[in-house]
Image (cartoon, rainbow, N blue to C red; front, side, top):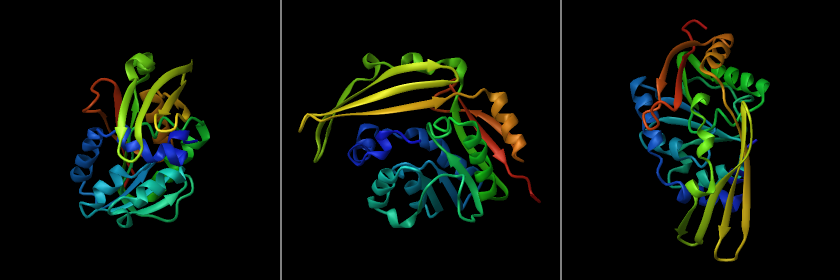
Length: 244
C-alpha cells in the first residue's frame, strides 16, 4: 500500500517540491531511447514526473498508481491530458501491448507481499508485446541503505510557493529483514500541522528476483548498475520473448 505521502492530498501536493532532483529518471529516458520504445507503461507513476517527461517526447504513456491523490497531482500538471492515467496497480490492468514497462525509484520495493509481487511481475508481462521489456530497480540489500535513514541525515526545510516553509525528516522504525519500516514527518509552518507517512520496503536478493522473473516467463536480458547510485542498486532488464 502506498504511504500517506502519496495518498494524503496535502502531502502529495508537496511531494515534487520536496524532492525536485529527479535526475535518477535520466537513465530510464535513455532506456526508452535504447530500445526504441514508443508505448510505455509506467507502474507506480506517482505524481507523473517520468510519464509526463516521456509524453513530452511524443511517447504514448500509460501511468498506473494506487494513490489517487498522487494521480490528481499528475493529471493537473501541464500536459497531463497526454497520458492515460489508471488508478490501480499492475495486477489488474486493461488489455495493453506496450514496448516497455517500468518501475522507477522505490516502486518495486513497496510491493512487500510475495503474492502481490508475483502478480505484479505477471501483470507487467501480460501488458508487454512479445519482444518488449520490463525495466525496474531495487536496492542491493547487502548495502544496508537503511543505516543512513535518520533525522540528522535527512532533515531539511523547504519554502514552497503558496504553502510556506515545510520541515521534513525520516526516522527508521524497524528492521526485520527483508522488511524495513520508516516514518517521514512533515511540519507545515503556516498552520503548525504535523503529518506523518509510514512506509515499509522489502529487499530482495538478485538471485531471488532473477528466479521469480524466469518463473513468470521472462528472459533476464541484463542486470545493470544504477548510474546515479553505483554499487547500491540493481536495475533489471527483463524480456518477454518473441512468440509468447
